[in-house]
Amino acid sequence: MAPAVPINIGRITVALDGSPYADHALNFAIDLAKRYSSALTILTVAPMVPLYLSSTEPWAPTEMPEGELKFYRELVNSGIARAQSAGLSGATGVCLEGHVVDEIVSYIEGHPADLLIIGSRGLSTAKRLLLGSISDAVVHHVGCPVLIVRGLDPGVQPPVGATMPPGE
Image (cartoon, rainbow, N blue to C red; front, side, top):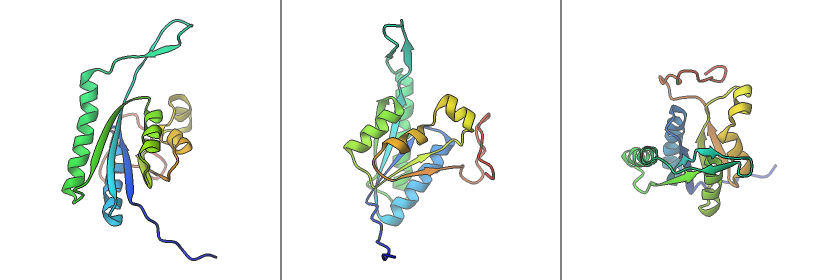
């Protein structure tokens, strides 16, 4: 067996969506960035809501309401503030608009990270098939290691209607 090679995690990107699961992922990202002296980028994507049209044009993107865009910008600012208060003075942030999976993958392609961290809602198989799983889709399309943080921070209750994995 070959000797272990030290891991270099110089750049970490964490994707946030405002959920308690993403908040838990941010805590992991901050902790790992401190341990590995990594640069930390906080990424949010304001999702475009499709407008369904006639059969010749299946859908068209709609304009993002300013209030929603403000929400995602505030997520970035809040994440940066938390990282800075934890001692990560160089934390940066990006707020994008579009299809969430496509925007995350595109961002990582243009700004390579050594690790992408994303939260997981712990959807059941049926809900994952019906609603889709952003973390699952990202894992299959992004070209860097991905840490999917499951569960919530201690003492945080899941949102109403959320399905938690067994044992959490």
